[in-house]
Length: 70
Image 1 (cartoon, rainbow, N blue to C red):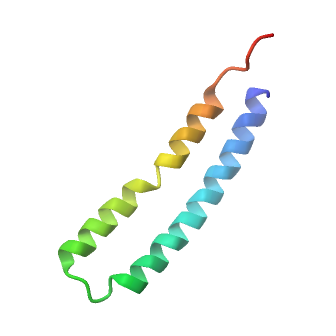
Image 2: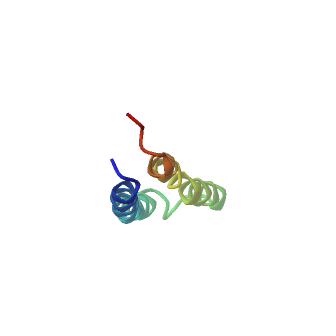
Image 3: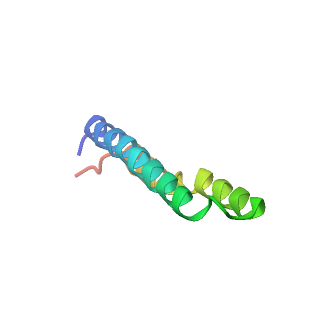
């Protein structure tokens, strides 16, 4: 697969992932955290703020691979 096509696919998937992830993270926060202790809220937002990067990291690695030579 050409690198340009991989980058296009990866970019679209990352944008979709960010939209879906942020909606899920917000919904979970609204459902669970309103009456939680501030330490639990801090831990949740720290985790949620960093956890989104794992799947795009794999996608970025895949996008930057050179095509295999035959």
